[in-house]
Length: 143
Image 1 (cartoon, rainbow, N blue to C red):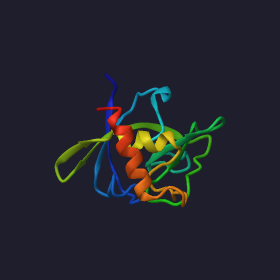
Image 2 (cartoon, helix red, strand yellow):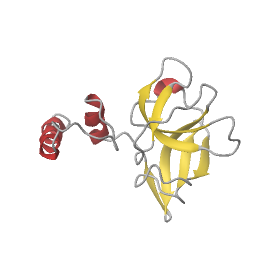
Image 3 (cartoon, helix red, strand yellow):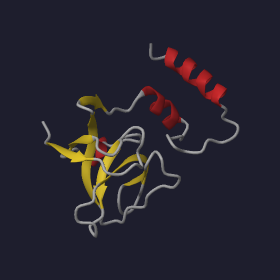
């Protein structure tokens, strides 16, 4: 079993999924091959010795830091430098004494299939009704 580390969330960039004061349980020794779009990872820039950032993976890079990441609340993606350090995958958060597993939910899978991610501005052709109907029809396939 891999080593688990605990970190306290300080930023609001992942709200409401992760809030300041949440304790994050991070799987440290996970291979980068097991990181998928929608996962939340912990990373830091080498220039910032103690500041870790937890953001969602929304894509992949061919060079440098292997992932394109973004806070759910942020408008733009982050561009970690090639020297950024990967801290692990967030698997659980503890808020007010209650633990909640962080997992790639079915809705994220559907959004990922269409290259859409939480916090992203949707194209005007994708109305709320369209997405609800799409989710309903695709979720029947998993029942």
